[in-house]
Image (tube, rainbow, N blue to C red):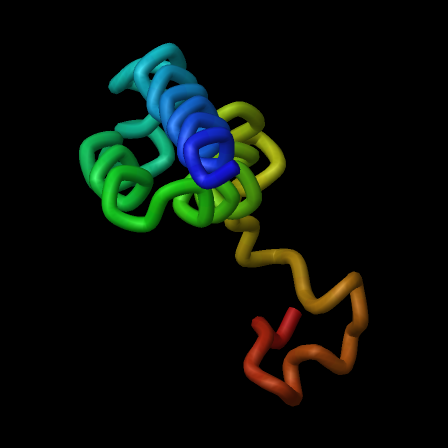
Length: 89
């Protein structure tokens, strides 16, 4: 049973590393991320590293247009956001 769990974990890790390498260096550079750091994280932390990558970084790499900082935007369009650190309009 332990061997099966280790094999599944290895497959998940390999899939995460392949996904990182498949996306390419240019996409990571455009998002301000480094591929080798995420590969090392996956190697050191196993399937948890793949989960962190898939939830936190992969969406920024695949859909960078959704993560563009727009200083004109406040908190959900709330005009009172200037009082809590937003831009005063």
